Length: 217
Image (cartoon, rainbow, N blue to C red; front, side, top):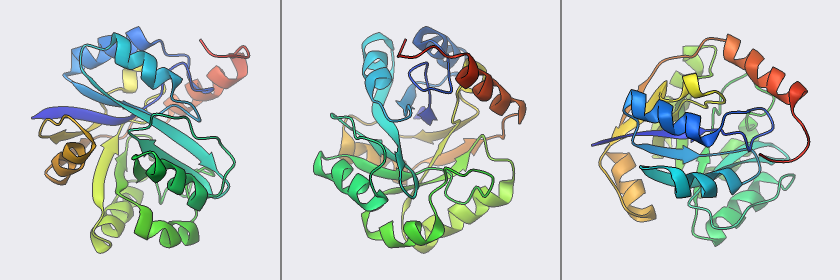
């Protein structure tokens, strides 16, 4: 079995300044041996992480759509921000990717996908993120889990780490896998493990935005 944190941000996200090496070190400390790098609107960090990490890396992107955020896994091409949610998931699928909806019922996030859009996308969704460590209320995780079960969708978890200390606060313990189809099959057998991070981590993200220089690392 492996421990997969399926929602991590690096310094390639505008609200994080975390170097790849710090994430690798934290994963090694906490026994996380699989990550999905899901930077905002770019796959550059994920591609770089694949080159430096000694463990399995899933290339992902957390994409800002007109209706809220959508994660694509197993991407080979970056998907631009600002499209409709439906067009975004179509582009993910077109390149053989996997569609995951992050923090779908977090009412404190303006970036969460709207409920009407979520319902409309159900035929295209593969995974619902049922536990996100940056949730403020556990009932939001419970609602996500209920939604996934009601619609027969796979469940995932991630720390949503924007700092190295958050890495591994949530993960899925699951069988090892080698490709997209094996990933989905392994996730179906996974166990969600997680705890909520301190609300103070959001302040660090805000400071990262304010102090960030234009451009990527």
